[in-house]
Image (cartoon, rainbow over the protein chains, first blue to last red):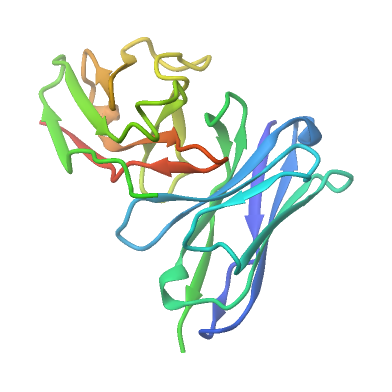
Length: 118
Length: 110
């Protein structure tokens, strides 16, 4: 079964750090670009970041650039999002998604919740 | 990276057709045929309904169709069913390897 499972979400204080993971199974992980997308409480989906199949190319939304780092370990079939200098506005459910169609994300995880609060 | 503009809600009766608009700019929707649409039931994983403006992934009902004119993309749901009630989001490539989602539309089946 093709599956993505996020983990690592937690309650963290403003200014703190957190690393999210997204474990892939059921497909050749190293063949797909991958994304992170988030949804703040009561708000819509927001694109966060994207990484190429070998990790050599990354891109970020302006709101997280310089604070978040996307990476991947193709040997472990895992996608990561390192989040530093966290702010209250980073509070959200974070989803990872598989890009199968050129910005068409055909497989998504169930999400992991990040809460930034003192 | 301003969000694409969608109507907050659209409603229709069972069997009717509805259309959700997604308005961007010449820097995103207007420049690329990389518009996708997602169905999202709260608490669940989003589901890809349309990619590259008008293509349907395997398994998605042909009641869902997409189109684009200028800076505005559209998703049409024909033969509306109760199970179609959900939030719908468009997404477009916005250049420089970045993307942008729409503001989201709640679809109500009356």
